[in-house]
Length: 409
Image (cartoon, rainbow, N blue to C red):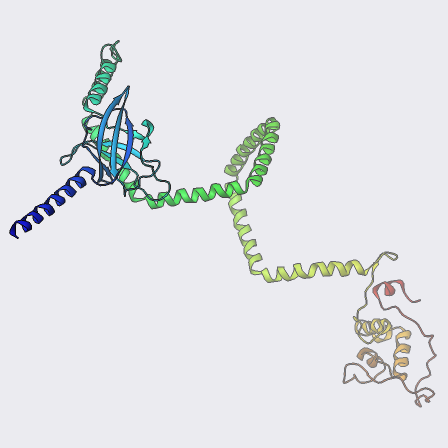
């Protein structure tokens, strides 16, 4: 019984060992990728393949093919690689050897199929130290006696530089210090500088939007310049005459300085009066056009007179006015009899009569300044004892100035 149990345990262990061997041989499922490099220094079978620094596979073979190197890699099947992937050889660091970096990481889109090929155009290898030495050697040769310094040009350049810089250390130091401070000032005022640039941009934009107006202005300016150019002889003569006139004016001012000073003082007085009478002058200027218009309307072209309708004589006729003047100016014996007859007629008809005419008849002066009594009723008998005055013909008078000058009609 014990022997049977031992045989069963051995059989189970054998089956488990066989399964482990099968798994170890077959491994995890992987995909294949081939990349072509110009060189693959430091890359060998077993080098890691990474994406964003994370290992996803290994290099399985490195095979030279003419002037390129074929590198076959395998990576985890659950990893997706973009169809346009690039293969880069990353130089070693302190903690890692060289490895192949696949970039960029997959972020959607078409994926690289199993067995995909990355051409030489999408691969890159780091520069080797030999390449750096070779470039420096070529640079030295270019500057050497068989290159730029074949005729001593480089030597002369170094000598000239030394001669120019010799003794100018402090000046160069001050220059560099000032340049640093100037750059610091520019950096501190970068907001203002950027604001100026922005305003300049707005200005240029406004000019661009007003292109037609700017063009028209330039054309007009060109036309004016052409006219001035065509009349340059006249302008030159005018400027010469102006220079002569200015010289004469200068001499005149020097010779008549006192008189000019007094004239200016008098002018100051006049201007002061004008300022003080500003309201009166404004009123005159406002009324003068109306007065001139009225004067124009009052002119009578047929008679050559100024006709007007006024009330200079008041309620009295011209004859009463003239007789009243004569009563005040001449003795009573020299007053014409017509004035006495006029006074009697006005008294009889109760018409307005001046105090002088009332004095001529021996009547008291009117209390109201003028007799406001109207004419007596028609057919009323004359007052008893009143002198009989012959009836005068009715005279139609034109009381305008032109009518008075022409006389009765």
